[in-house]
Image (cartoon, rainbow, N blue to C red; front, top):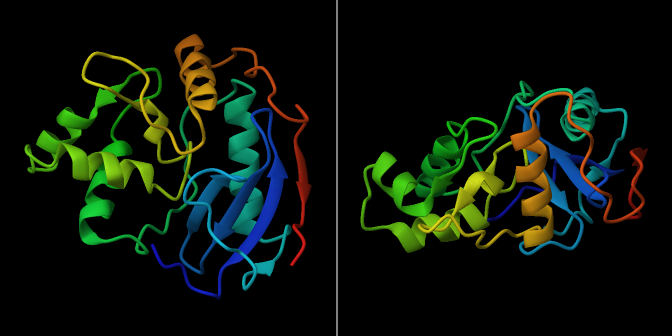
Length: 185
């Protein structure tokens, strides 16, 4: 996925480790755990922790991690993926909190029942972790499989969602605190 140079970004700490958020003029274009697979190169992006879209996304992620919400309403900008990837990411948005789906079910949902591996690749390239809930996709046997942010994070996110709103935040993997900060250029 090729992301443009004109994105705004900020880094936040979360109970599951630091995250990079990026926004275009249209909506949130990225939410990655720092160092995860397919992590982008933000060197050309403008760092703006006060950007309204980034502040909204950070606040919604904080509330989610604190067990205070299980849906997101920040506008999304998914246009940086291929048409196929976008169709998979839109299908991910249909998986409700506390539920899971499989790669095969998503393949069928998007009308490509034999594209299970391609769906897996598109899920892995999802640029908006948590908000576009790729962590809700499991293997056909229900086993936790592939998550660009790491299986420990996937398990924590699923446990948080299965506990429902009001649940305690997942155990910290990093600092355990939320903090907005600008990453170095």
